[in-house]
Image (cartoon, rainbow, N blue to C red; front, side, top):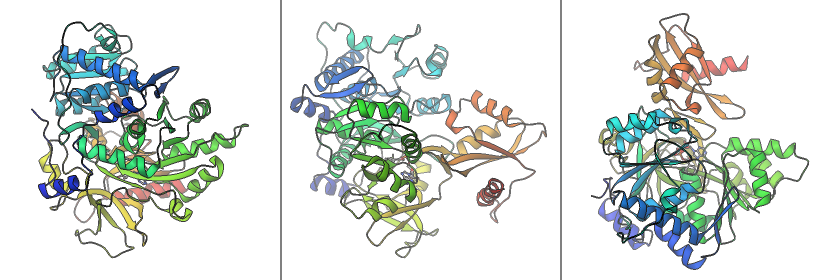
Length: 540
Ligand code: OOB
């Protein structure tokens, strides 16, 4: 059974095919072609390990065969959570080859997110890492099984006593005939991306082979990737940006090399860049600032890069200019979203545009409109919410019809929740946000999700999570709390949030205890007043 998703209306699908965007090819072709053209080239460097395209292909094929023997089959779904290691791509390609659609959770995700994904997807397969707290012992998996009787295969990267070892699945002998793995149809769901979210429950984003492959191909063209590209994957590998903009899939598409970094710290990444002659990387503004500081304190010359992509959160003009001055590289701003649309500044444009805008859409068939509160398009140069539709932007989240009715307009445009201005050159400038989300150095925190968990504490009467400015992270989170118990302290609330499985990066950075929350004329919590209040407190 194909996995359900909201299809593009026929007329659009036809247009995207006629224009050659959708080519009817599964994402597995990326690896297949690289293997044919550059069999001995190094696809991946992970620690001391080097994997050629042939090895990546062979390992992922063996894993697919092993999983098929264990009863995992086309149309199934999988929950995957791995750190930045080569195994992430081996697993990803194995699942694509057998038509199993995974959701690749971020390694920073904790019980709350993992359980929400499992509840929505009802996966038959779980692949995770013993390095993660949730999977160090079998307690969580036992809990999952209690509401997921369908969960039949659990494979863990690293050593555990309660589940199969992931590597052993491709290292074992496979004797006897097995069915050939077959990817899902190109116009069907290949895998799920993760939404940054603004609601109580994390949403899943079904991406088809056709639409995702197009976004990868087009990104490699704009970013000028070649077989000589050596890309440092310093952000969490499953994220849409380092996966496809142009990301690791873009690098594989052209036969280049991906160097895995466990984390984006300067110490670690500078060494990898020098050692492996990395020439392109993708980071968030917070990391860019940390790298600039590290370069200033380093007696050696800053590591040499040809291209530094910066995106995921707002980049200030000052930092943008310093990047080019210090790293002597070309800068590319990237404004994208897991739902689809990705904008890039182009290398041949005037520096002014590269330093002060977030670029323009990658496709000439990306449709963008900027609207006011009534949904009317604003005049050129005015601020409004960005709505978009196009050949790689989804038409609906997975299985949430009521939410989709709000998240998309009647013409199928996705409401990004971003406040933007379009320049006369057609560039997008992101100037603010309408959605109830905190962008903490590129990591997205849905306010409602955390408010709900705070409200579950017996002494919390009202809770509102807002963003507050921060010099390093861009934004941090602050929780305003009305408590029934005057003795309630931040430490108790942090403990409560952790006990409820909230990821560390989503824990509020600051708590403010108040007698009541300000309300708007409609009776909703007036978050603007709270943001002004915290700004005033930070200024004193
Ligand atoms: C990327 O994807 P998500 O899904 O984690 O977050 C999307 C949201 C955008 O709606 C916007 O609010 C913010 O992140 N954002 C930016 C930005 N890039 C993303 N805000 C200001 N300036 C930017 N350059 O973050 C993502 C996906 C693909 C490529 C790049 C980023």
